[in-house]
Length: 256
Image (cartoon, rainbow, N blue to C red):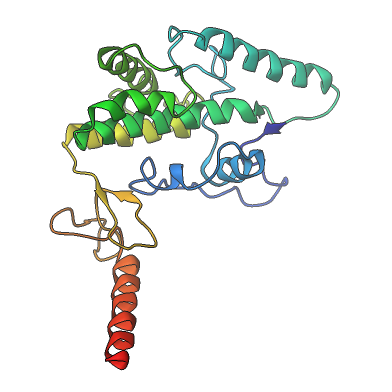
């Protein structure tokens, strides 16, 4: 099975709008679907963009490290699957961004592993650092030190596209080629920024949510979100929990 980036619009129609990643995409939306389900994975990719790099000269897995045990063989099998599909369908017009759904899942699980590793460290959970790798797609590291070595390799590989550049957009200027960027790289950049600011990871106090978050969303203007003294990931969760507690008190008082 293959997934595609959003297909090009019909000729003469308006282009697809650019989708902006939410500020904590790496911590929230990236965890809110089952990556083992190809239908859910396809829907996620169609919404947020491909995690792979099918146009990159180094292939689909250009920003994953090549020296983590069996990773080389895994990446090679994904490239063969994509090549076989293109060869079999050479007579049909295909979106050039076609990629195996398994390649998307590998990148998604890589991001989730990095986030789980980081949150285990922030929480002071030493064993969780090793378990973060074993709980996803990768083999169990031999030690915490090896887990950190893998963390460095994976995150540094994902951050390769980012460096200072100028894109004036002036007529005659060289256009900025975004073919090498992927949603995986952008989400990894969000994680790197959270590391740089020594962000605190919280669990939403709404008992029906319990999602991880750094900033409370929905109570501010100009993207200035609260990080101090917050219990809920959003104002909606705060309101829902307050209503839940109110109903419980009202029921308890009625019994009394």
